[in-house]
Length: 375
Picture (cartoon, rainbow, N blue to C red):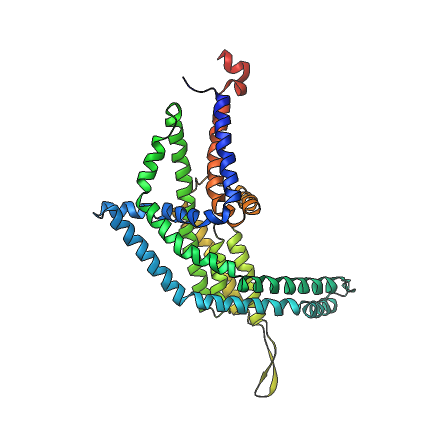
């Protein structure tokens, strides 16, 4: 005899409450395990493919892990030093730009007043606000950078992650099929097929989003970084890295990366007086290079929207951009970094469950009323 619906809700409510409590209480401890599980989930299709080619599960897992570690250290040795160097220079450059905002505003105000005499731009309100903004960013930015660089705890956490995550990934990837089979064996018999169907929908959503969108982020990040560096933009590598990293939020990656890249291009190629052989020369605005930087992001957006996302992600992911941003904001605020790691899977689960409940509601008496009862 099946348990009453009220009892089932109570049990599942207890499970959800325990999950939220563990996430809140053990966030820092769980981070490498959640990361390892996410990576194992991402790599499981590759391991399955290698098995079809004749490798055993242990051998397939070893090949994947050692290849991934080799690529990681290759990136660590070749790319990371440049990335960190550009990040430090970028922070310094942004500080200079912010520091010069009041002077830039005064120059712009004088130019606009000269061309459009009817504009009333007198007063120091904007200048005062820019000065306050510059001081705030400089003071906060300095505190943030110094905290990141001097935090021994942060360094220890990174080292622990670098050691634990590959180990967790190896064992979870090796036993992935067994873990799935054991979880399937624990499903309530009365709802086994329903839970399996929901799990398949969640897996399709996550597979389309995490695997597909992760590949899109990697391709676009590499494209933006390489193209911007070839175009001659200072900090092209770090801008491409940032744009690729947040591409999983639709339009946000291109918008943030584009604004940052075009802003840096304007700062780099705007022109102005420079000293050449002891003489002051007025350098013109290099609109061609600025236009090339803007075109790089337009081309990236075109390929993402028309080629990459339709083929790698698909159109039926089921994660609306607003829902995704809300999940990242809420879980990040409540549980920190570990909350952001689980935000996408939890958002996918909630989305699938919401569609299932709506379907059940529309097929029930509460929705149909007397009309459904008569028919």
